[in-house]
Image 1 (cartoon, each protein chain N blue to C red):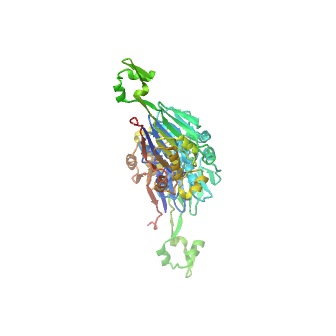
Image 2: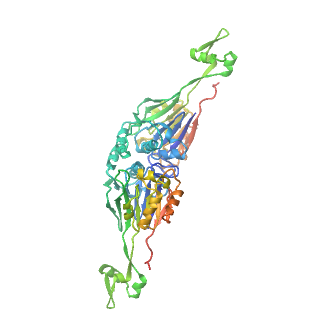
Image 3: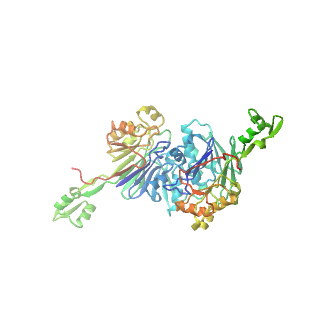
Length: 302
Length: 302
């Protein structure tokens, strides 16, 4: 199960209700997708153990997506025995850190800083986090994908019927078949492939074909929706999407659910949700503190 | 009247209840004393018009006191037509800004950055804001003083009794005396000096004689209280004060009221308030959102 907590859902400028962009993902480990100002405190307020954050992914270097990282790493350094935090960020992040770290009075040696680029960035025990390029002004800007590996799952009724027991389950997984009373049983006869869960995040972007591709069939698409249809042209001009465009991406990618975030300060969110729902029904607009749990399939599909 | 709002009252690390250090002062204009991460959002949440901030004073460059400034100036730049914000900060701030500003995509030309140093920094219509050195690790670290000018105020009953009227009030102020029916009336005969209000802020410091001097007779002393008596040695080691030390400063400086802030995460504040009150009775421990209004004297003292 992947638990996603929206720590901040504003765009550019925070409001009393919405903190700066940051999304916490908890699987076996804790990850942050973007880390806007105040993210550490939002983690504290929402009971998310900031000290255990394994890696932080910054989609692009606009201040609203990155300014929370310095305070967070300072807090982790002071309050925990952590020896390493991994940060994936576009080119330019190290220059920011070089400006700030002298005032911290310590060398940022416990940071493992890697340049954000397309492809797999992080490999977990049975999942990966990867990045893809999007189009946001003239920035190095990325979207992200969490992809759990597909897994072979036994169809217990079938396996039992064909006489599998004990060590045979291990053997059939290793060899792809097993002999039961002289009869060959193939793995695919008694198992099914459970699709790994998939969550995609657009980062900041205009309507972008690459988001459609990257989020194909995802359980969840988290897409920015900085503007509504009233400001469609401004969205393009500023390198952002409208709620309807986010919904169009969700529809074309055939995702299961769409969550709007990065909500422009002039909107309360419900109007954007309504605009998106006309195009893609299973849409919600995130609020600060919204939690979404993405579960894998429980049983084989018919 | 000077209205002081505590936007953040934590030390080093925020908590669910306490944001990073920042104090808003509203007189004719709005000032910030320190600007920890999240300050802009705390201003929004507390109805303080962040867009009008005239000048920001950073007492020292530890991250908890400064990291909110970049997001705030970015928000002011985007949302207002402001042409200038003045920032007083110790040496090193421009290096931080040089690291960060390229990612903003604009030159920080609307910032008027001045090096924090001892003495008067800002002159308002009838007040000044000045800085004094304190001792905090090996940092360039400062405390701040808001000082309203003393003013001549007429003692109306006396003035009336001696026959002053109309233009005579202007004349006596200009010349220091006026003739009423051939009789000389001196300004001091019909007026009293209203002491200007004074508020001092320690910044981060150990027990420091210079805070006593700088806050002499203040209406309000805002003093850090990172530790309690249980960790007196650690306070010294880390360059901070205990609540009792803050109270000792208040007592020796004969201030009217003491407010504790910069509260270490291990304390809830009430225990620090109690420790301080044993030494200086008129003490309160600030919470996030605490507002204190400092009023000038209304009438001549007996």
